[in-house]
Amino acid sequence: MVGRIAAPGAGYDPGTAGIVYQRRIRGGSMASGLVMNQELSNILNEIWKADENRLVPGIDYQISVQGKAGYVPAGSNNAKDNARRPLFSYVNEERLHSIKTFAAFISLLDNYEMSTGIAEVVTPEERAENNRFLDAVLGTKVMQLTHQYLVGKNLTSADPQQFKQHLYDIWFQLYSRGGRYGRDSSGFEHVFVGETKRGREIMGLHNWVQFYLQEKRNHIDYKGFVARKDKNKPDEDDHVLNLQFSWKEMVKPVGSSFIGVSPEFEVAVYTICFLLSQAKVSRELVMVDEYHLQIVVYRHGKYIGSSYPVLLSNNNIPLD
Image 1 (cartoon, helix red, strand yellow):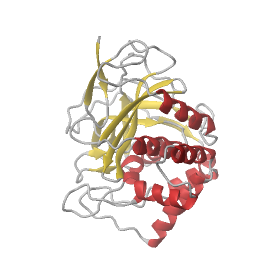
Image 2 (tube, one colour):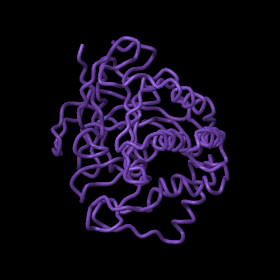
Image 3 (cartoon, one colour):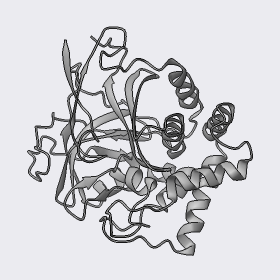
Image 4 (cartoon, helix red, strand yellow):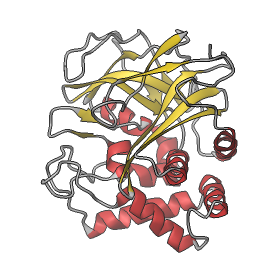
């Protein structure tokens, strides 16, 4: 059976909508060459279990998945709204701000120009915020496991300060995404904050906290969930979601995000996948908790260009 899986980032623009054609085979292998990466699944599950700061659905936050999103051609900013209510009906912001890594993360979200083509300027205060965030995540069990794993693979230094600098380079070093327009982007901005292609198309924005805060300010309008191959409607306690939304009047036909997880969990997952491969685009099939995922990473030289999860199946539904 040939499946058609909506995969953000495929095609012309990392982090935007596209379609990847793959053959799904019972047991988790794929005729396109992707097979379940068991070793990667193992370390990601260790990190998942160590994520003490992950928020609990139904207690710390509540989402409302509502209707299935319709088809939107690439480049179009017209989308039928199949979700009249916001995606997030409740988030315990007091808990968000009381967790050191979340609080440090939120302080970074207003540090960037939205559009590519405008060179970023990092102030001393913003650099200090970047370092505070890294210090916070490096103090967690999640990042300690990540560091240990990467040292064992000879992919980073055993020295904690050198590892911190390695993370800073991967995530926060600026580079040019808009060609001649100067250093206008970074891995952190693209993945966690979101940006636009010179004000015309949404790129990135794969983080649930940023999504919630932008939705709260009426900058994001959730349009509905994007159907998976198993055709099941997502559960409202799912920790991964494929979705469609508009952001400041631009539409992202297919996006994807972990939901409820800590910032350190996402940094850990994407850093590991980035460092394990030198390919310009890597796609790893993994099983994390009950979720069959494809973790996609785009490389921009020595830096992360884009990274996100694609939910293929959940609740132990076999791939077929």
